[in-house]
Image (cartoon, rainbow, N blue to C red; front, side):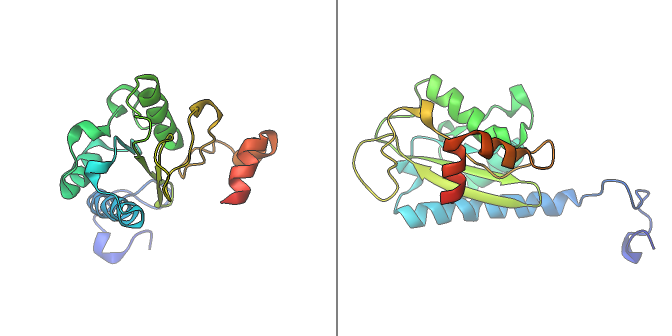
Length: 178
């Protein structure tokens, strides 16, 4: 059979894209919340402590639902999907760049990055651009030398990420350390 018996009336057959949208949405909202809670727990921070939560821009409804579940101030969740659409693995770095250029990444105040990618992969990290020393403080004061490796569907060709790492000593060092 092309499809499970319980889904026999579905006109989409094998070889075509199929997705259980409601289940993916529920999974994404739950996992988004868990990933952020985990980062807050591991750093001892609360949503009030961070200047921004920079989320993967896959779906604004997912972002809003997770934000509401954690009671995070909407002004701390940057959204640009309305201007760029889902920019895949580039969404978090793109948001970070826009926030940095707009002066919304506050020196010494931590910010969180949360990303999701193909195959339902996920990651989060908490950063600071200097200020008080702590476990999560990167001590970075100049974002121009930052290399970010984020999960996502960003590889447009097999081996693209490897080629990028091979061409960039900074990227290779970050990848090897991870």
